[in-house]
Image (spheres, rainbow, N blue to C red):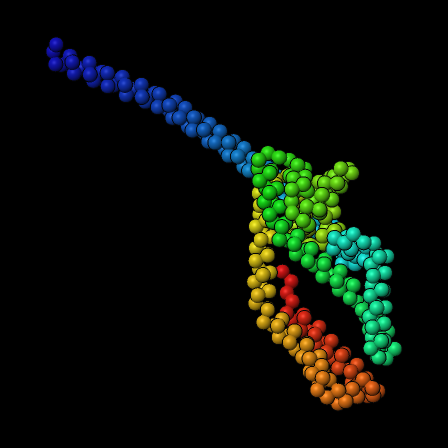
Length: 334
């Protein structure tokens, strides 16, 4: 083939391609821009859908958070009322809280009998009738209540020692697939006292028709502790708003153990101050007893003379103020 003819063919092909490109360029550009615009519109629609979904999720979380906050406020108000009532509990309620199976009438009879016994012993010892009556009244009215408070505080201490272990058992039971009702029955059947008896009351309340949250809240009536308040709030929130109950109870158990460690640490750090307060408070009685044993005539004027009575009364008043101040200085709420 002649080179001239080949060159003409190549040039003609190039010219035809150039003419075709020139005629179709604008259309190709329009199609390309259209496709790009469609993609941007689709991306914008996808972004709007994602933004809407994100807003919906945020609104749902905010709504749930507000619901939980409202529930917490309502529960806190109810618990404050229950705590106020527990602080003003009658002797009958305090006997139940201490785990004593006696009636208030029997309690008062025991206190009155003990007061009469103390007054009679002091009267036989030769003390004045007014002193005997005063000592009998203090012994009959004060000592039984002191013993009742001692038994109540001892029962609370035992409950706090065993309560985190009971929560751990509940956590393992719930993780293994048992419902909350069966976990409570497990503690009521195989737990340690006094947790066992308190959970048994809760289970009996459920059998009477109360809900789980209400039956757990009733434990505060017989065991007025902040730890029980925390437990009832966790159960109530889980019943109203849902959530991972086993994780919540595990966190509560950890918090209770940390509170117990902190309480023990504070008690150890304040033991020196408590020992000093006890020594200072007991020193006047020890000195008076030693003086009476060595020189009875020297100190008996305080009990036989009117001026001595006034001195004893003023000394008792100021000593009571000092003991009260020292007690507030060495006691810490955790």
